[in-house]
Length: 450
Ligand code: ADP
Ligand code: ZN
Image 1 (cartoon, rainbow, N blue to C red):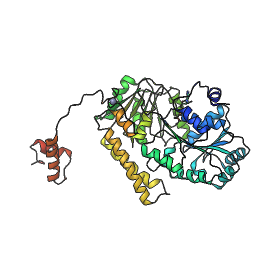
Image 2: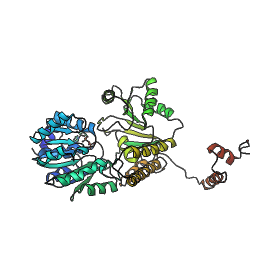
Image 3: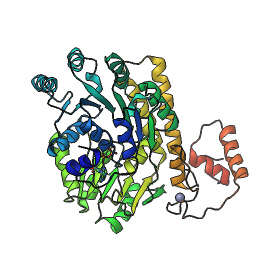
Image 4: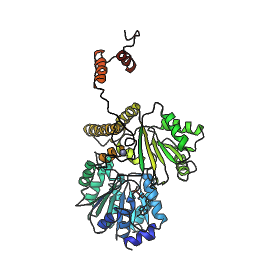
């Protein structure tokens, strides 16, 4: 079957989307590829179509067990012979998959990176004709990226061990310039075809709020928009419980999702959201990977996320159908501190494979990304432009469809006020809180100031 027949017969689509064909053609001609395309752009087809045309098998490396399973089920549904190997399978199941693979049953197998260098997997691939290795979420290999996974370093060793080098195809939704270069270098891509489809999503309206009470702001918003489908992201499980609880009490059709719930409840809640029986989802960032719901009309971040990568990926779940949708972020200073805490904690927990110096380096990069996320909450410039520039693209500098573009700011010189406040904080020995300092600046006559 040629690529168009595969697209039509297997997936039921008439034409390729931007970027897809170039990547597919390149892989088919035996050349390495790197595809950087936003979530929802259709990366899977870029490696699945060539996989179905090649004579040998394609190995897809993916970090997310749930995504692997979804993709394999979707393939099997349309009649493609595919399977996955990861820690969710029993030993018996794994053995069965390996046996089938050896017999040439599959065109595509998905594998978790941890498995690559195991004896059993290496002995399997030694007996197979491997046409392509596709690396999904390829940014995970870069220590400059927001999702570095040491297990991804095994990919390089794995490729080096193969008797014949297959086509290497790397895909990711988010990569800054450094991460992109790092992917090419770490994976040893040879003269790859690089396709970057634009990050801009013109139908998304960006807005930033610093409400006194986030809950009141949310309730006001839902008064107008409570009948639409939306996602409210919080950065802790506790916050999810509180927000979801409050909205539920007020009668909104709301459900929840976070890693502390049972598998069964998560599955049930996710389905209720997708089929619109409860169209409002309150969740941590554990929610959303692989979710393809087109009519999400707003994504509200009740807390500031840890970096622009996460923010844009999560906010980007709004308006997949191309219709107008809103992305609103509620900022408070507390969010910065919680993120700092999470960065520190993550360093302690993960990455046993890294030494202290490497850990420190990664944590410094996390903090730098957090700073850039925080600046987003304070810029008066076009919000869309800020994000696009972060990913190395240049926007219009005034998109006309974000809160900052629609707000008239007035420049006021506050140098002398700022100088008096800073001076006072300094001369009073950093001993007083905000209210005492303000009282003193205003010359309030009270006992403490005196
Ligand atoms: P990504 O991995 O880039 O986030 P997916 O591969 O999950 O995106 O694709 C997102 C959605 O777009 C899927 O529902 C997929 O079937 C659909 N899709 C992909 N390519 C096309 C196409 N050429 N025409 C129509 N729909 C497509
Ligand atoms: Zn703008």
